[in-house]
Length: 237
Image (cartoon, rainbow, N blue to C red; front, top):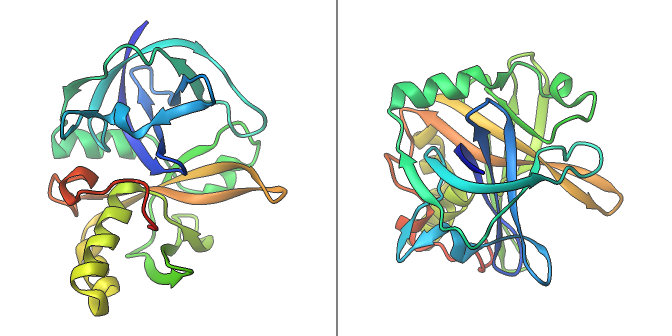
């Protein structure tokens, strides 16, 4: 069953896997995964055609959906897809269309959106520019965002797993380490910011919140994505 999704998340996982998620043509959040022999998920190679990233944030792609495979609390959006069918780029939406889609699926309150545990993917708008933190821990670069959503709730130090954001963090860490945070803040400042939140699988007895997408209107990356920065998904970022 061929279906088109508007991609709102490409996030780094371990061992060369990524998590892809988006909004389908029916307005439903979905998280596609492939049934590999060793595990379910999506290998990073599936994103690309040659050196070009076909699956990347804020584009529409066509995938071959097989059946829903909802998990436990929160993770209701999982769908099995046919990994033998190459993803197809359908459209790079205009800035106006991107904004329309993001606004349509934005929640004012993250707490209310997650209250009944019926979903694990939420878009919110922060009040102003989020507070950004970038730190080095045990040779791994970590980034966190703190912000208030439109309801006024404060969300402190949510870890960022968005591959676009991590690619930019790594690039700046290498080329301008002393100014990583101010340059990221400047890239977001004065723009309409959207933050995609994802709920993790259970780890250490909890399901954790993380920032799985950072989007702005106008686009803070000016149309670029993780592939433009040579991000390889396997390093310590």
